[in-house]
Length: 413
Image 1: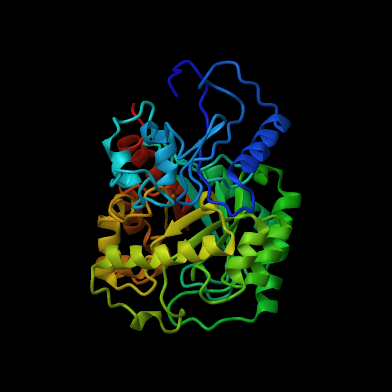
Image 2: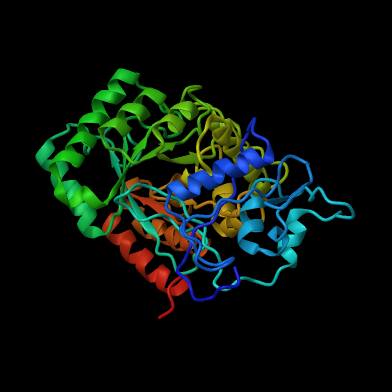
């Protein structure tokens, strides 16, 4: 703060429980700073690490070493912005203060440069920056090792490793930065397979990609599963992301497992199960508000389980407990999830419109694998609406679509 000539820095706010009093807590924080090599060269200026106590419950504390609430917090965008992700509507515990932290944040002038929210994936993969207006869109290639996927079932089911290697290399060459591997179809009405069968399908594939395809060293692997055991073993085999279509509702062990692995997670909106979801399509408050509210409950459940906010990616779930008007409304109003639903402002979003049924209904193209042109329109709409990742079958074609859409909506040429 107040020093313009400095490198970019990362700032965050966390809520903790402690048995330490304010000064004991300060001593502990300062010992952490020293252990991490803090050197204070400029007052209120850049330093390698700075740990402050903003609030201590609702107490007001004054000492020559420490003042709580933090004296300068209400004028600092980089403090209020993350604080408002935790307690936007609470008020400072000071006499005469009747404004919320969110009110103070909104009253500040726009910061320059604008802070960028960061979502980490893995050490070998760049973080997502969902609020960076110039960010590129990531292409997630779908690799189904199932016999019955609605679109490409059976193509990779045999686990012919030479053919699999060629497919993965083709994905990467065509522009994929993430490969999403699934061992059970979740299309409407699909029958679940057993845990053992799903493990037998996906684990050898992940292990092969990580150990035998050097070109894949810098791409992320996502495991598409709602089973905790599959997710855990997939991460041990080399997966970086857990992509759960149920957002942890179909397996009570999924959220704790996600937290334990420390991996990034995709929480998708769905109601019921693949066999019941087509009957659960009532959204009385509107598609954006109802999906947004239900995703917020899943985010809260994920955080309560120990999943870090900076590891969460959201997916509105095109085609899952949605009819065609719902899917079109999501594509039309995707930006509203990012800006119009309080609590969802800083998350990255994945969109999975590839070859979906509503595209076939609109175009009359019955064969899913021939819905490339319709998919291209949905990918463009997804990027215009702010998607950070698009999940697709036709990698080469959709990379080109994304490249042009990024140039229109993201990158300034």
